[in-house]
Length: 493
Image (tube, rainbow, N blue to C red):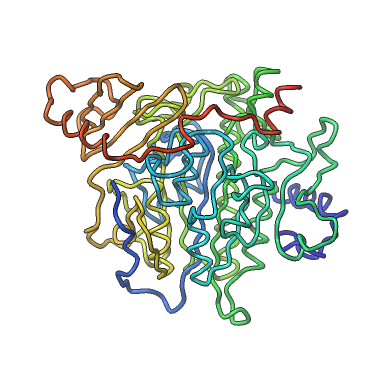
C-alpha cells in the first residue's frame, strides 16, 4: 500500500526517503455564504498556513527588523495584510477550535487547553468544504482530538492527515513517530495509524518534524493538483506548523527549548542561543512558504489558489526566550496566555493572484471564527446553523464589507476565568473572575497602558451588558486539564 502524502513508498523505506527529501529541501451572526461574487471558471483551492506562537511583531511586514522573513513579506506584498485580526484564543486548542468551527470561545466546545475532543455535532470548515467537493488534507498539528476519540481529523472532514494529534507530543520536533491517515494506507492490515522514524529513536535527531511537513505539503500539491482527470477538483490544505513553539520539556532540562537543526543565518549574531534558534526557526518557516509558492507556480495553479497565513496566538516566554528580545508583540501589551492585544492579535496575510490587490493593508476587524464562513463563500458552499463568524470575502476582493462585527469576544479558562471584548476602538478586559472591567481606547493607546474605565462609565456599562449575553454555559468548563499520554511521558523523563 502507498500513502498519498508519500506515494509509491513502502512503509519500511518512507523514513529514509523523507530524510533525503529534507536534506535536499533543507457577536453571533449567521454565515453569509450565498452572496455571489465574480468567481473564476473553477472553484479556487484554499490553503491555510498556521504558525504556532508567532507574535504580531515577528515578521518583517509587521515591523520586525532582525528576523529575516522575505517570503512572508512577499506574500504580503502580493496580497492583503490585516492590522486588526485576532486569534481564536491566547493558547493553542481553543484558538484552533475557533478556526475550525466558526465559533468563538463563548460558544465553542473547547475553551482552554485540555483533553476535550470535538464531537460529531461540531461542524468544521473541512466538513463544509468536503461537502462542497473539495479534497481536504491536514498536515502538522491538530490538537482537537487524540486517537480513539470523536475528534480525530478523519472524523472531522479531512481526507488525509499527517502530523501530531496531541499538543504535548507536538513539543518534540524530533519525535520518533507521527500519526498518518489516508484511505489506502489506513486500509492496510495491521496499520495502527503511526508512522515510525528510527532516525529519531534513542534520542537521535535525524529528522526534523516541520521539514517533514513542508515536504509533505509539496507532495500534497503535486498529487492533488486540480486537473481535467479529476474534473479540476479543488483542494483544501490546512498546514499547521509547530514553529516557533518551544519544546517546553527540553527547555526545562537544558535551558534552550527552541529546537532547530541549526541557527543559520544567525550563527554569528551575539545573541543568546535560544534567541538565535528562535530566529532560525521563523526564517526556516519562511523558507517553507517560499517553496510552497514556488511549487504552486511550477504546477500552474498559483492563480487559482487562495492562501491564508496566521498564527494561533501571541508569542511565548518559554524555552529560554524572552519575547521582548525581538519585540515579538510589536507595540502591543502582553504575550501568550494574556487577553491583552499581544496575546490575541496576530498577523493575517491573504494572497489570491488576480483577485486580491497586492500590497493592500486592511484594518477591518476579524478573528479566527471568520475563516469558516469566508472559506465557505469562496467555495460557494452553504452553511446552516448559527456561527459567530462573518465572511471577509468582500474585504478581500476590495468590496464594501456590509456584514461586519459589532463586537468580538474571548474567554479563557486557565489562571481562573478571564474575558475580553473589542467594540470598535474600545477594548475591555476582565483579568480575573469578579474583577472590574479594564477599558482601553486602542485608537490612541494600542499598547493598553491607560485604563480609562473611570472616565467612560457608559462604555463600561455597555460592555458589561454584552459580556452577560456573549456566552453560553458549558458543561466542560471550568475543567481541570487531564494529562495526555504524551504529557505523562514527558513528565516522567
